[in-house]
Length: 347
Ligand code: GLY
Image 1 (cartoon, rainbow, N blue to C red):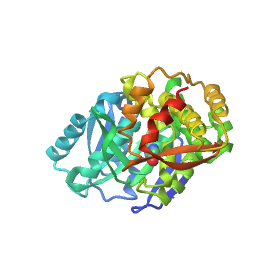
Image 2: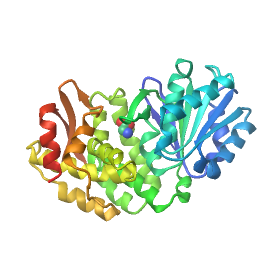
Image 3: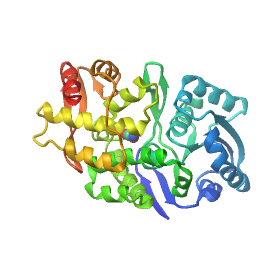
Image 4: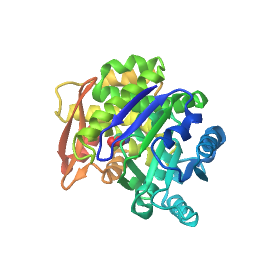
């Protein structure tokens, strides 16, 4: 078992091991008095893992309820969020009760946002069951839902009280879901640690999860509010979120971020923001992992979507500039240059 303590405004542990779901109640019981625990999940995850989580919580004295919503990005909506809040109110949840999110990034983000806002904030525990959510979204306290106008446009920074990461859950994932995680793992490697690449290639989940969490820990501790350094973790997402949304989510998040990383790398070099063109190197790594890097959306549409990017502050947008594999920097690009940036990346 590996444990990281994330020393943010509210410190919490991330516990990483195989086959620990049946100990959920014990780990949570070490941190909370017996209380009501609302387990939030989707219908797919529910049929795999949630019974053992609920059983363990019940065995350890928690009084559980369960909210299950349909799997998929369309559920990450204000509508689902409102239903969760109404269910918590109907069950008379109080500020000493907790939410337990069991699932991938969509479940974690929406359950976290409900926790951040119900009664102005209650505690929640993240139990990521996908590779992607284990290495990225479950840690760091970003919570959100989508608007029709764009991904994650409503949310809050609200740190979990515990993250329980059981990488044994990845055994149940179809190869395309493993690929999703590889995109975010490759992002962490390109941003911060070139040595991680072979471990991603060989599916060494334990090492990749531990290393990605350790990278995320140091970045989030330095910039919890996402005003500076943390924006490095958004590499590939300015374009990637656009590809995802414009494809009506037929292109998955990981696939879109992989394409976005290449477009943004080409753009940064072509704009003269770095003397090193490492786009071919990044493409080789991503294609080797199994990504299709073609982009069918137009520059026009990607530009319009990029105007919703959360890295826009006033008249500048922060872009990530890769200098070598494992080393990236941030650059504040004037908004009037954004159109040219995207055009150059798409060439
Ligand atoms: N997923 C990027 C972040 O947490 O900042």
